[in-house]
Image 1 (cartoon, rainbow, N blue to C red):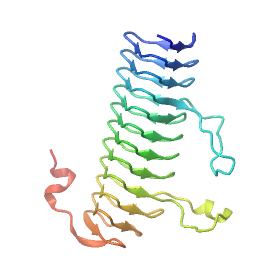
Image 2: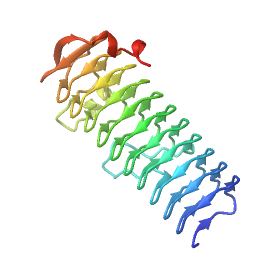
Image 3: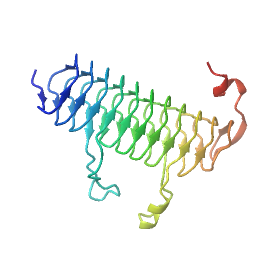
Image 4: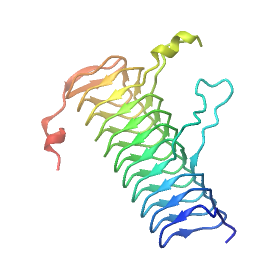
Amino acid sequence: MNNFVHERATMGTDVSIGHFSVIEDGVVLGDRVTIGNNVTIHAGTVIGDDVFISDNCVVGRWPRPAKASTVKVDASLPALVIGDGTTLGANTVLYRGSSFGKECMIGDQASVREKCEIGDRVVIGRGVAVENQVSIGSFTKIQTNSYITAYTTIEEKVFIAPTVTTTNDNFMGRTKERFQFVKGAHIKKGARVGGASILLPGVVVAEESFIAAGAVVHRDTEEKKVYVGVPARVLRDVPARELLENQE
């Protein structure tokens, strides 16, 4: 089958591997793991039971930033950990130093960088880019082609619609001063962010607030309020029937 499995890799029971895949030194595969064709699982990666990895995935890779990048390689990065029942779509790229909870879904062509913490049953849609040092709470959904910048915090049960953009740097110039102010958004429990919205650096999207499609959020929001426009402003309260406490 033209695969390479390192002699120090640990395989659970009923593991299935497609063609032309590479499993490196120290990889741990749980029971009933399914691996597609042309998959690379880098050294030390830990994969739980009942995980499905589609074709052409790169799992547990070390970051290799450009020489001009502000992000430097951390030689102490721990191995990537993927929880039980998680599914990786085709061509996903997951970096070393991050962890995923149980039953997550990572869509085709998505990427998650190093030092990210992902909770249980998180959905990261097709083409989503999650940068380094991001936290995503359980039961959160991030839809197609959204961009989650570094140092963003997303709490549990958040919904982020397609093509949302988050930012973390207000400085036009590439000065050293900007590093002490770099900060992503903090999106709190139950908040919903509409399609093509933009969240400016450091804003707090309050619990169960709703950001309408196309809004630009430049200030912290209030709980249970609907925001619209550029810049975003309060339109009305979120209807009671749409709050988490009234959902099935």
